[in-house]
Length: 294
Image 1 (cartoon, rainbow, N blue to C red):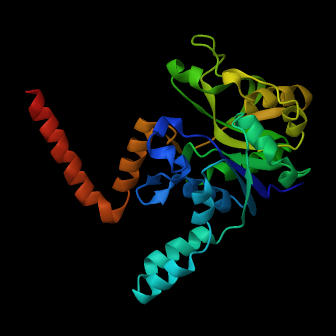
Image 2 (tube, rainbow, N blue to C red):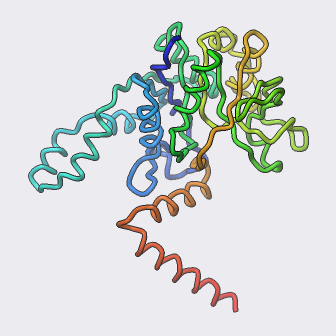
Image 3 (cartoon, rainbow, N blue to C red):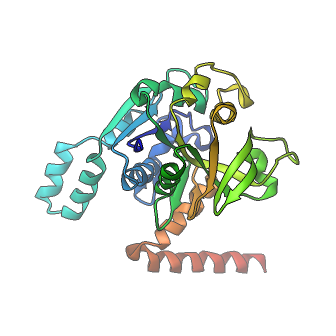
């Protein structure tokens, strides 16, 4: 059994939903409290047993590389000021084997994965999307790896979404179900409203066999005028079985503004150093809002 040791994290998107903040800053570096979103994704990969990560970046994304590099001047400054707790935090983010490749044209998620094909070679690999942070007892990616080790097949992470939101996601058309694992008839990228075959949405975590590159090589244009990973998975499913797994855990959508704000608040409330003052603040502003409505 080939083990999953490599992971791709696509981070080449333009971040238009967060403009103007992302004009000069990668959206992956926007902080949830005091940690950039991409650090949560890398941490999940490492905690799932991934040994090598390749981040697919684009123009203006150099800050991601700098974040996961050592900063000797900063480290020396923290030592002098005896801020050893902060020193441990920044060293932890740098102590990961990360590689980088640039997606030179914004041609979509499928194209970003294709750009990392030489790094992956002929072995199964993981993909983690930065718009989804998942909190769970067992890391989300580890759950998918466990399923791969049972099936030796590609595994797509899914969760249920409201029916009115299915047009925003890749959706599976499920066949047989075994516990939380589904055999899949079809994968549909962003179906039109009212046409989705289920409400089981593909949520930013994948284990894929290297044969996926045979279909990504075609550079087939799909929804939104881009090369869609879901389309390649649909083609792969006609050649070798692909499963979907309804993973456990709470998923946070940090790829849009409201979800990002909600995530920041909830993560802040989970911090002992912030919980009390933040709760007091939220109660106060809620009180003021209610009074203004009277």
